Length: 318
Picture (spheres, rainbow, N blue to C red):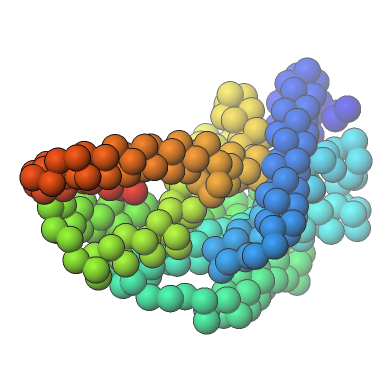
């Protein structure tokens, strides 16, 4: 496998462990991203949200493949090393850019109730365009080199990594947290307005949120959690460059290529998977019981009915 000094540790076994952990995580992510892409492409009717997920999973798939090319495949200073560094930088930015678009889509759909279908072309130009620019600039300045178990932006000078990726990454992480917190607050407030009141516009608003927002609601959380691991490792490297922590490196090696696998889990649970099926089954059972009660007891208390309906609404809370 990899030579001892190449990963930052003096133990060959530690370096091998990092390589194997990254390759295994990358393998699961390739399977996950491929599963999502095949599932959506095989569906007869693809909606706008599914199209966004196609682009996002293409980015996660591109982000995963280079992690198979560890040190025993790529030599430092070679043209292949530069290609791998460019590829990782482009794919990391693509995942981050598409996550910004998914989060923005959530915000606009839930808070402003706007249809974002017309933004597809803008999303594509912005995400792929920004990613190419972010990868070309380090290439033009010649900063792609050996970086741990793979090639990326070299460690010296350290500020280059933070300008080229981690600075924007920190900004995106905290922006997503802020937007998500606002969405949570907004949804709690809207729930109090929906409860006990029937209005056609409220029903339409809930329907649109279920259709356009709920399939995307967990992706930002997964992205933030994975990004924080890598960010923590790089911050530790910057503060104590001569004291690397193997556990942080191991977590980073596992989580760096893992977005594709977790994206597949979110897709299964959020789109047409287990949670949606259970929710529909419970809604169907409630509807049948409610219809039976009302047909056999016309004097049923409508307020009680509203309370039961509000419990179903909790399925659509954040």
